[in-house]
Length: 364
Image (cartoon, rainbow, N blue to C red; front, side):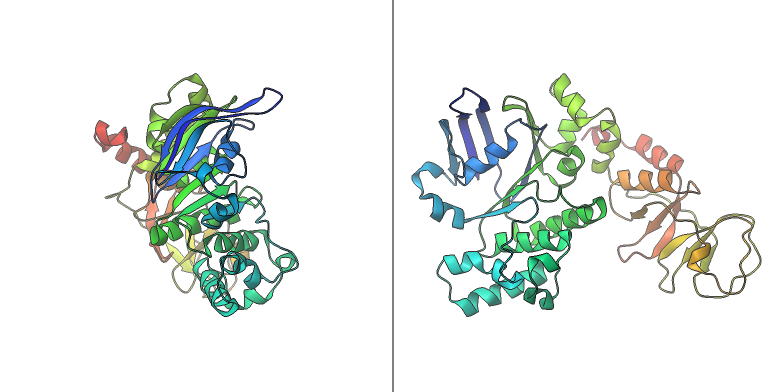
């Protein structure tokens, strides 16, 4: 557990970066600090590992004031992930990950073995360990950065806008990877971002900061979206916060319909009057074939219209509504956890399911 007690950071020119912050970060949970630029969220995070020292108040980790710890020793027990990974360019990936264990006194063989294990943990193949950072994509570099932060198995992990420099697709993959890792590792994580969508997606608690380093609201993502503390929070989380709130409603029991299907690479019959869903040989959706489309012989992927997002069964309603709204046919494609076709849904079905939930459930 991490406690901020009346923590203030004032610079010599009088600028207040953090103003009397009182906040408790739950052990084994992801807490997200979010807010506009210059609101003190990164300063607050960096005071935890003493990269910045407060000018007032105290920060405790498991009841011990961090000011009582030697900064170098403190940092070895706290994982730290920054934007663009911050890897050593002259070291291989494996040696980058092994850095902290080596500094902690591990022998080289043990440290490198631990590094190899962690590359697999964050979803990178073993052969990647022989490469240098410049030979990796941005997403791969961020995975290496996470692996390095976990190398000494620290109980606390600090993440300072770690995914902001990658494209949206890679960013979502990294968010999913972080959530998967957290299910396995139960670290106490402080994650800094300026993106409210990222905050509500990964955070178990969200701390919204306003300029001047003032904590505006602290609570669950659902509470922040449903019950913003003031006009600033309401404005920051966005006018579409009701849509974001669907992230906390489950789609259990949603009924699906069926549509005609065709398999890419197999012969295609007479043109259909309605849209046809194209799937691959494993029954995974590939796109849509428009009505009355003429196909000469086998169905080709080149004949398809790109589909919308896919909705995975058992995940929140926001994904179901997005799948329906983003589809060129207004039919959201539903898949199972292996990505195989289950059926289709409409936005109307999703809205009916929302309306059918008890008010207490909708307000969570």
